[in-house]
Image 1 (tube, helix red, strand yellow):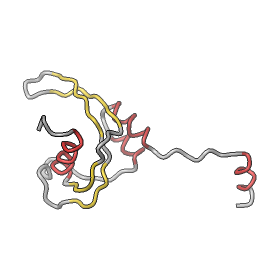
Image 2 (cartoon, helix red, strand yellow; image 1 turned 30 degrees about the vertical axis):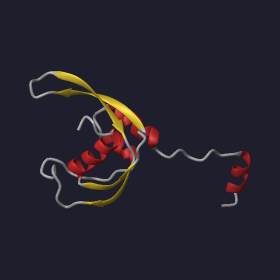
Image 3 (cartoon, rainbow, N blue to C red; image 1 turned 120 degrees about the vertical axis):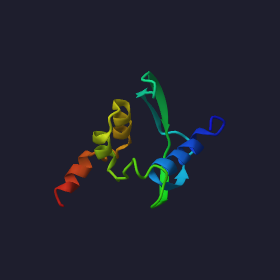
Image 4 (cartoon, helix red, strand yellow; image 1 turned 90 degrees about the horizontal axis):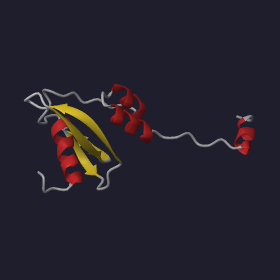
Length: 112
C-alpha cells in the first residue's frame, strides 16, 4: 500500500472500515495526529491526512462490520464524539460559518 497515492488509500480505508463507496477528492482537507498503541505496547505518533468523500452508497457487508458501527453526524456533533483533540478541531473548522450580518441585513430582518 505504501506506493499508492494517499487519496486512494483513504478510499480503501473508507470501504474497509465503513463500507462507504464514492468519490474521494485528491487534495487533503486537513491533517491530525494521535498516539497509537501498538500490539507490543509501544506508543507511536501517527499523522493522518483527511480527504473529502462524496458517498454514493453504503455496503451492507464490509470488512470491519463486526467491529465498527456506522453513524452519520453533523460535523459539529462529530467533533464532540471523537477522542483525538486535533481531529475534533479539524472537524469544527469544517462547519459552515454563519453569513456575516450587515447593517442593511439587520434593517431588513425587522420585516421578517
